[in-house]
Length: 185
Image 1 (tube, helix red, strand yellow):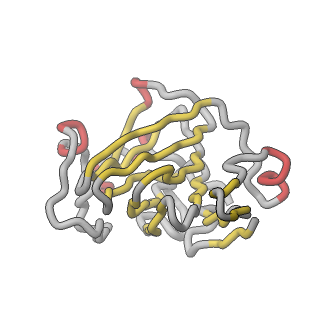
Image 2: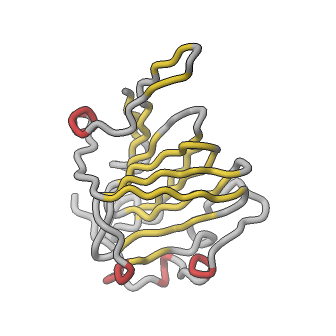
């Protein structure tokens, strides 16, 4: 397993070991002991799976105050996955990082607490898996506008399809600071 650090401290790309032959392949998508040794020391307690079509944009989502770290990967298809630092006081506040995740490259992205998350679907469909460090809480559900001009994210899709909820999310600068996590150096 290889760990690649991104320009957002704590956000990691994980390249799992893939064992393949003419019959197919095998890989571990999670091994608490091995991942902890590489800096991903989370107690993931909820797994989620979403299926989306080409052009769907989901995000940018986070929970506050019941924050979640996430380990995400694609089971089938390809997405452009994005993490945004929303921790007030962080040297990288408002900065984002994006990476293509697919069933072919088998990359995973780890997002510690304090980051908003979203993705766009680049393939016909995408089956997307999330491991979360805390349970989903409707009252803690929060988000940032996918098209916030201050962020300037290139989602790599021509005609994005969004949920009604995601269409109404505020720009980062309009979110009350009490609804954002605080950076702890």
